[in-house]
Length: 346
Ligand SMILES: NC(=O)c1ccc[n+]([C@@H]2O[C@H](COP(=O)([O-])OP(=O)(O)OC[C@H]3O[C@@H](n4cnc5c(N)ncnc54)[C@H](O)[C@@H]3O)[C@@H](O)[C@H]2O)c1
Image (cartoon, rainbow, N blue to C red; front, side, top):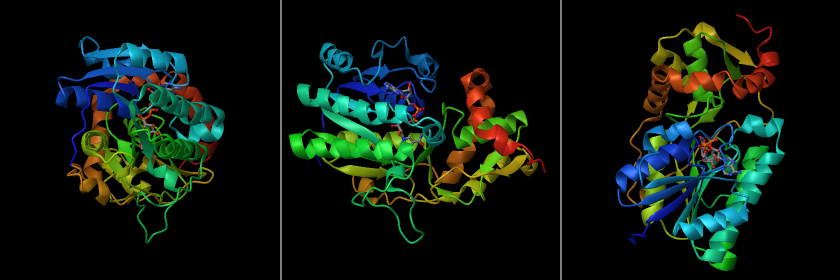
């Protein structure tokens, strides 16, 4: 198996949830690497996520938009970047339903700009995609990498377009690229609009937990640590031009996930409210992860353990999320849930 040299990384979206976990993991495991985090610092991007690392001489921050071609090019040239890892994205499905255009700007055009810079400078690019590009999956199937993409939300469609642009650049320009498609991640530093941190922080505060529809949607909840080791495996040993699914290969319903969150926090089921479903809500995601396993990767966490551990992290890190929940988050929460929750008292 080829071992690719990876020395100077440009990590776009490195101040977000998965990006910041990946930067911390990478610098711990690869002490001789240098990392430049390139991040626009949107509402989801937080410098505090890497507060313990900014004094480390191996890490630098460039604040910018991935759509700014001159800044991306200049940064890659000045920092002798040999690999771009693209985590940067607008990432929340509900936000993509409320205001979709920024998803096209960042996820499609932004990724396209990174591809152009990579082509100009002859740099390898690894793209972080998602299981949502496959659309919802019938009960007797698990998505494999060769499956057709069938996205159903503006978020998923923008990620599918980016995924296909990356593949097109490999074919048309012979650009060295790899792609990982991650399952739903849970763990530290996830912005509390997403289900597990939203339900955990609501439960900690004694607030209602709004569950879309019957709550029987199936998801593979993977620990962000396993996503990081999966990406690392592909960066070091992945076949250039190939796509790899990263998840646990096991699913649970959202109701089961909430059970685990409540048990982990010692909170009551009385907090649960079933609310009007998300339009076009995908019923089931499920991925086969055998291809990544052929590179020697194995997930460390069982999905139940991953959800329970994540919920506990939010109980132990109130100082991280309390300021977030009182800001722009509140406005979003009201818009998304106030009407849905009205009149659902037990
Ligand atoms: N969270 C999941 O469960 C999950 C699962 C599979 C794949 N993914 C993918 O992983 C990646 C990271 O997801 P996340 O959950 O960490 O997201 P996140 O929303 O927590 O972080 C996104 C980061 O990107 C930055 N960003 C946004 N627009 C930008 C722009 N135009 N230019 C530069 N930076 C910009 C934000 O400031 C933030 O730091 C995304 O590509 C997402 O599609 C996420």
